[in-house]
Image 1: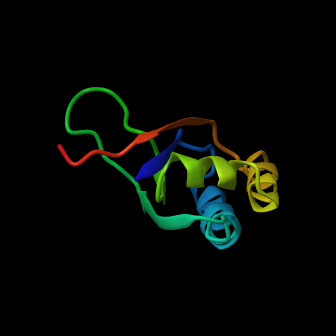
Image 2 (image 1 turned 90 degrees about the horizontal axis):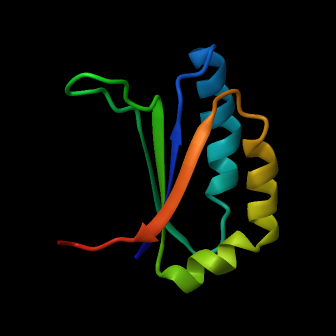
Length: 99
């Protein structure tokens, strides 16, 4: 499995962010070709330091499926919409192992 993780910083208006994210952005993400699973969480820190406001994990069968999704018209739409979300984000990808 191959995963794209997106971490969002706390937005100035969390309610507006949640509305835009869950009502508009998530449905767009669910159209990505090759997507086999998606999860969304709002982590809370266990110790000192801040946690991201929201973490999204998008799973694909493998790196090839992920690369195909990244060049799809659906991903172009998702990317354009992501630019309108009112929160800074960090994205990273990698193979998922069961260690």
